[in-house]
Length: 182
Image (cartoon, rainbow, N blue to C red):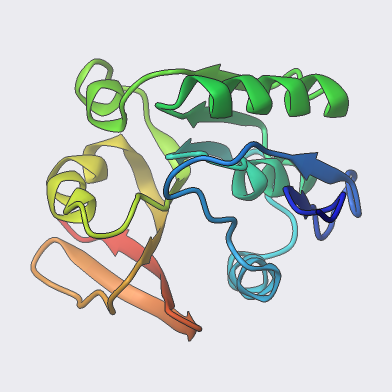
Protein backbone atom coordinates (compact mmCIF):
# COMPACT_ATOMS: atom_id res chain seq x y z
CA UNK A 1 0.00 0.00 0.00
CA UNK A 2 1.31 3.45 -0.92
CA UNK A 3 2.04 5.71 2.00
CA UNK A 4 0.41 8.58 0.05
CA UNK A 5 -2.83 6.69 -0.67
CA UNK A 6 -5.01 8.90 1.54
CA UNK A 7 -3.42 12.29 1.19
CA UNK A 8 -4.21 15.37 -0.83
CA UNK A 9 -1.97 18.38 -1.38
CA UNK A 10 -2.92 22.05 -0.97
CA UNK A 11 -2.12 23.82 -4.26
CA UNK A 12 -1.36 27.42 -3.31
CA UNK A 13 -1.22 30.09 -0.67
CA UNK A 14 0.43 30.07 2.73
CA UNK A 15 0.01 26.27 3.08
CA UNK A 16 1.12 25.48 -0.47
CA UNK A 17 2.32 21.87 -0.86
CA UNK A 18 1.13 20.84 2.61
CA UNK A 19 -0.40 17.35 2.69
CA UNK A 20 -3.75 16.64 4.29
CA UNK A 21 -4.42 13.09 5.48
CA UNK A 22 -7.87 11.57 5.41
CA UNK A 23 -9.44 8.19 6.22
CA UNK A 24 -11.23 5.80 3.93
CA UNK A 25 -14.94 6.58 4.00
CA UNK A 26 -17.85 5.69 1.74
CA UNK A 27 -18.33 8.28 -0.99
CA UNK A 28 -15.28 10.31 0.06
CA UNK A 29 -13.49 11.53 -3.05
CA UNK A 30 -11.07 14.45 -3.03
CA UNK A 31 -11.71 17.16 -5.59
CA UNK A 32 -9.09 16.50 -8.28
CA UNK A 33 -6.03 18.75 -8.28
CA UNK A 34 -6.66 20.24 -11.72
CA UNK A 35 -10.31 20.95 -10.83
CA UNK A 36 -9.19 22.85 -7.72
CA UNK A 37 -6.67 24.81 -9.79
CA UNK A 38 -9.38 25.76 -12.28
CA UNK A 39 -11.92 26.69 -9.61
CA UNK A 40 -9.49 28.92 -7.72
CA UNK A 41 -8.44 30.54 -11.00
CA UNK A 42 -12.13 31.32 -11.56
CA UNK A 43 -12.59 32.60 -8.00
CA UNK A 44 -9.34 34.54 -7.93
CA UNK A 45 -6.24 33.46 -6.09
CA UNK A 46 -6.73 35.84 -3.16
CA UNK A 47 -9.83 35.29 -1.04
CA UNK A 48 -8.96 37.92 1.57
CA UNK A 49 -11.92 38.73 3.79
CA UNK A 50 -14.18 35.95 2.45
CA UNK A 51 -16.29 33.90 4.83
CA UNK A 52 -16.51 30.32 3.53
CA UNK A 53 -18.63 27.26 4.22
CA UNK A 54 -17.52 23.78 3.18
CA UNK A 55 -20.58 21.51 3.30
CA UNK A 56 -19.78 17.79 3.02
CA UNK A 57 -16.22 18.84 3.85
CA UNK A 58 -14.69 15.38 3.36
CA UNK A 59 -10.94 15.81 2.97
CA UNK A 60 -11.37 19.52 3.67
CA UNK A 61 -9.11 20.42 0.77
CA UNK A 62 -11.46 23.01 -0.78
CA UNK A 63 -11.93 24.82 2.52
CA UNK A 64 -8.28 24.63 3.53
CA UNK A 65 -7.33 25.91 0.04
CA UNK A 66 -9.60 28.92 0.71
CA UNK A 67 -7.96 29.58 4.08
CA UNK A 68 -4.54 29.14 2.52
CA UNK A 69 -5.52 31.92 0.11
CA UNK A 70 -6.41 34.31 2.97
CA UNK A 71 -10.12 33.62 3.49
CA UNK A 72 -11.23 35.31 6.71
CA UNK A 73 -13.01 32.29 8.18
CA UNK A 74 -14.10 28.79 7.33
CA UNK A 75 -16.90 26.59 8.65
CA UNK A 76 -16.66 22.91 7.72
CA UNK A 77 -19.65 20.60 8.03
CA UNK A 78 -19.00 16.86 7.96
CA UNK A 79 -21.40 14.09 8.99
CA UNK A 80 -18.90 11.23 9.38
CA UNK A 81 -17.29 11.27 12.82
CA UNK A 82 -13.96 9.69 11.69
CA UNK A 83 -13.72 12.15 8.78
CA UNK A 84 -14.57 15.10 11.05
CA UNK A 85 -11.85 13.92 13.45
CA UNK A 86 -9.34 13.85 10.57
CA UNK A 87 -10.39 17.41 9.66
CA UNK A 88 -9.66 18.47 13.25
CA UNK A 89 -6.23 16.83 13.08
CA UNK A 90 -5.47 18.69 9.82
CA UNK A 91 -6.75 21.91 11.38
CA UNK A 92 -4.27 21.43 14.23
CA UNK A 93 -1.43 20.56 11.85
CA UNK A 94 -2.04 23.76 9.87
CA UNK A 95 -2.80 25.84 12.97
CA UNK A 96 -5.98 26.98 11.25
CA UNK A 97 -7.48 29.03 14.08
CA UNK A 98 -10.16 30.66 11.93
CA UNK A 99 -11.74 27.29 11.12
CA UNK A 100 -14.79 25.78 12.81
CA UNK A 101 -15.49 22.07 12.23
CA UNK A 102 -19.03 20.88 12.90
CA UNK A 103 -19.90 17.17 12.98
CA UNK A 104 -23.50 17.15 11.75
CA UNK A 105 -25.74 16.61 8.73
CA UNK A 106 -25.66 19.34 6.06
CA UNK A 107 -29.45 19.80 6.03
CA UNK A 108 -29.53 20.07 9.82
CA UNK A 109 -26.75 22.66 9.75
CA UNK A 110 -28.48 24.80 7.12
CA UNK A 111 -31.90 24.58 8.75
CA UNK A 112 -30.64 25.29 12.29
CA UNK A 113 -28.97 28.67 11.71
CA UNK A 114 -29.09 31.75 9.52
CA UNK A 115 -25.35 32.37 9.15
CA UNK A 116 -24.31 33.70 5.73
CA UNK A 117 -21.17 33.24 3.67
CA UNK A 118 -19.41 34.74 0.66
CA UNK A 119 -18.46 31.35 -0.75
CA UNK A 120 -20.02 27.92 -0.20
CA UNK A 121 -18.38 24.69 -1.34
CA UNK A 122 -20.88 21.89 -1.85
CA UNK A 123 -19.67 18.45 -2.96
CA UNK A 124 -22.32 16.02 -1.70
CA UNK A 125 -22.30 12.23 -2.14
CA UNK A 126 -23.51 11.26 -5.60
CA UNK A 127 -26.75 9.41 -6.40
CA UNK A 128 -28.50 10.59 -3.23
CA UNK A 129 -30.41 13.67 -4.50
CA UNK A 130 -28.59 16.09 -2.19
CA UNK A 131 -28.37 19.01 -4.61
CA UNK A 132 -32.10 18.89 -5.33
CA UNK A 133 -32.73 19.16 -1.57
CA UNK A 134 -30.08 21.80 -0.89
CA UNK A 135 -30.45 24.27 -3.76
CA UNK A 136 -33.85 25.60 -2.59
CA UNK A 137 -32.44 26.54 0.85
CA UNK A 138 -28.73 27.15 0.41
CA UNK A 139 -29.20 30.52 -1.32
CA UNK A 140 -30.42 32.07 1.95
CA UNK A 141 -26.94 31.33 3.38
CA UNK A 142 -25.12 33.35 0.71
CA UNK A 143 -24.28 37.00 1.20
CA UNK A 144 -25.24 39.38 -1.61
CA UNK A 145 -22.94 38.54 -4.52
CA UNK A 146 -21.95 35.26 -2.90
CA UNK A 147 -20.93 32.21 -4.91
CA UNK A 148 -21.84 28.55 -4.65
CA UNK A 149 -19.34 25.96 -5.87
CA UNK A 150 -21.09 22.65 -6.58
CA UNK A 151 -19.85 19.28 -7.77
CA UNK A 152 -22.21 16.71 -9.24
CA UNK A 153 -22.30 13.63 -11.39
CA UNK A 154 -24.26 15.63 -13.98
CA UNK A 155 -24.23 19.09 -15.54
CA UNK A 156 -26.29 21.62 -13.61
CA UNK A 157 -28.48 24.05 -15.56
CA UNK A 158 -29.43 27.63 -14.77
CA UNK A 159 -33.02 28.05 -13.60
CA UNK A 160 -35.25 30.75 -12.07
CA UNK A 161 -33.27 30.61 -8.79
CA UNK A 162 -29.67 29.93 -9.86
CA UNK A 163 -27.35 31.11 -12.63
CA UNK A 164 -24.61 28.64 -13.56
CA UNK A 165 -21.93 31.08 -14.73
CA UNK A 166 -18.93 28.75 -14.95
CA UNK A 167 -18.70 24.99 -15.34
CA UNK A 168 -16.32 22.27 -16.37
CA UNK A 169 -15.90 18.51 -16.45
CA UNK A 170 -13.01 16.30 -15.37
CA UNK A 171 -13.56 12.58 -15.77
CA UNK A 172 -16.99 11.86 -14.29
CA UNK A 173 -17.05 15.06 -12.23
CA UNK A 174 -19.00 18.13 -13.28
CA UNK A 175 -18.06 21.26 -11.36
CA UNK A 176 -19.88 24.58 -11.33
CA UNK A 177 -19.93 28.11 -9.98
CA UNK A 178 -23.43 29.43 -9.35
CA UNK A 179 -25.01 32.72 -8.26
CA UNK A 180 -28.37 32.92 -6.55
CA UNK A 181 -30.67 35.17 -8.59
CA UNK A 182 -33.67 35.42 -6.27
